[in-house]
Image 1: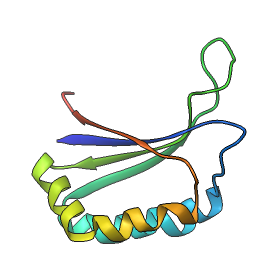
Image 2: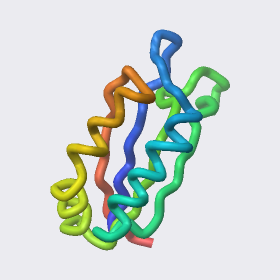
Image 3: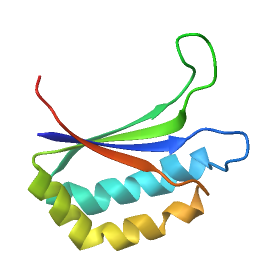
Length: 103
């Protein structure tokens, strides 16, 4: 299994519409990508670093897929639609990391 982490940078100058993200974007992701192997999707909000300073990322989506091939198939099938929706909730560039789930 793999975990795709989509991280949206924090910063006072950035726009992020949390309501749109939770009510429109994430349901779209789940609807389109579940048939292609998305097994879980979590959204976490950055609160702070251990020293109390501002977090590096304001929002993260944790997307679990059965395999890297599943993720690639999901992206091929609906990636354009998913990525085209991003400007509707943020003006930041997300960082994406693909990780293998070991335990």
